[in-house]
Image 1 (cartoon, rainbow, N blue to C red):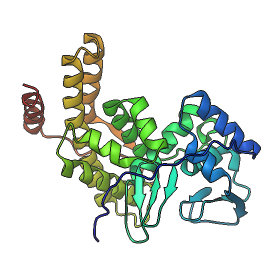
Image 2 (cartoon, rainbow, N blue to C red; image 1 turned 60 degrees about the vertical axis):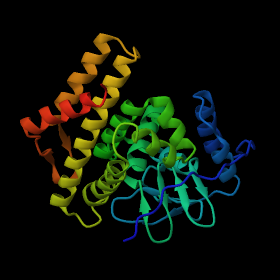
Image 3 (cartoon, rainbow, N blue to C red; image 1 turned 135 degrees about the horizontal axis):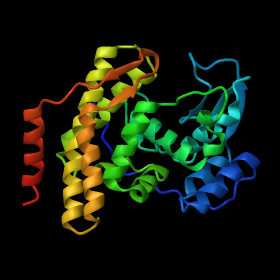
Length: 291
């Protein structure tokens, strides 16, 4: 399938405060945390929300990026996930050619960035709306555990404020350009594709191809390591962090070799371990680029 060319999203300007009480509460939290709310205000004006009997297996709700609709499954505690869908609504822009949603871009035929977008959406949901997320309820549901973790690692590399701003403005183009400061552009695109594969094959289980999912996860891990070492050393050499902070993050990167993550239906699997020799070469390669 032909790749989608990543482009800058259209600019949106709208300051009309949402009238819906639920959306207004969501809007207030975003404003308090310095998020841009232009897209939120624009989409909230004609957002349609309704209940359905079923969307797909295990889904409790969803946002249609093409029609600006939020669907909620009856009797599934919609208050526990509605803010996740509000984040999608608040970061979706449309033009004549494609949809820009969070850190994803798509048209009628192809898309890129859904894995990163879903993971980071849930990370933000739990960060800012912890009191009404599934992890705090008796009907406990672990939402996108792996893609959320990987999205958090990307945020560690580029910075929280920067990544939140890219997300809420639907600017995947800006994020990819930032990541290209650390690795070649083709590696950034492959990372996005690999995370999409893991999301669809591992977490959403569209086809449930476990070997394919785990290979994609391993590729994502290698990408995070290379970006992480380069950005860490660059920031440390530029006196942007203390030695203690540097050592803490460095140790965290080294532990990624051994990390084990819960992978939904499939239980717990070890990531494919990195060969020690490859690991040494990777560190050497990254450090040599800083000289």
